[in-house]
Image (cartoon, rainbow, N blue to C red):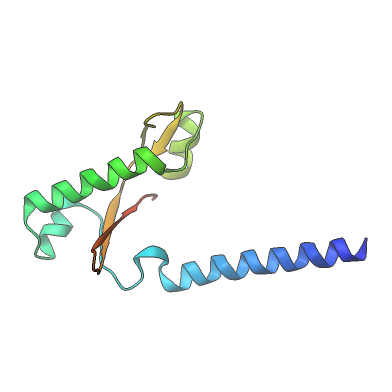
Length: 114
C-alpha cells in the first residue's frame, strides 16, 4: 500500500512540475508574440489579409484537434466562445488569437481561452 502512495505522490509531483514549467515558459508560444485579434496582428506590422488568414487557420486547427466537449455550454463555461467540432459530435473552443513560432518552417499555434 505504501508503494502505491509513493507512486501516486511522484505522479502528482511530475504533473505539477510540468504544469508549472508550461506556465512559467509561456507554453507553445514562449518567445513568440501572441496576437489576440486581427487588429493586434496588424499593429505588429503584418498585412491585414495575412492576419485574417492566420486567425482563420488557427480556428480551423482547433476544429480538427481542439479539446472536444459534448455540450456547447460545457465548452463555453471553460473557454468562453466555442464552435461545432469537425468530424466529431461536440464542440471545441474558438481561437482567441495565435502566435507564430519562428522556423524554418514557421509554425502557427492557436491560442484559445479567456
